[in-house]
Image (tube, rainbow, N blue to C red; front, side):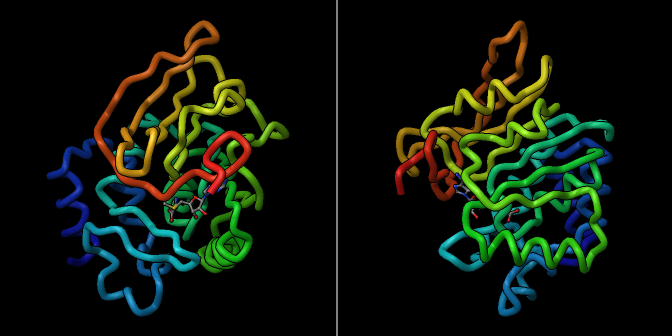
Length: 209
Ligand code: SAM
């Protein structure tokens, strides 16, 4: 599949936000997958990225991105940089992107790709994203791309009034549901979207391994 056929495919899966579809045309997924998998970069499948981690299937990345309802002027926090693909998309959709990765080799690799592609509005932080990133809070939107036990309170605190959080939550990796939370009057109104399967969110306010 070439990138424009891929875009029509994403529309067929329910992606209607034109800015999200445009971002998918701009960000080359080929740069974010392992060399051996480049020929599969535009298939709608998760792929390995090293260190036992994965890049999610594009239709799910698109859906999670669309749920953030970004207009372009936002400050966004991503937990789970992984390959950097999601952050690359966000860099076209928001004003500033902060992304946290606990595995330093993945964080370093993502930094190199962002430099190569000229993405200047992304800051990669190596660390435990379950604590959020207080230094730059509050955020208009937070996206968590690893499976959480529950929604960490630190993340809710660091979300702006009216802000949105998109996060997979579940008691076990086999029992995760994608949730969207909207912060109103200091509290989070939560909506269930669909069952998903993500690697675990490991950290102080996540899983222990
Ligand atoms: N968004 C990524 C992309 O576009 O390639 C895919 C993320 S991958 C499914 C999940 C990532 O979350 C892994 O790289 C993993 O190391 C990371 N992760 C897990 N727990 C974390 C934590 N507490 N803080 C930061 N990163 C974490």
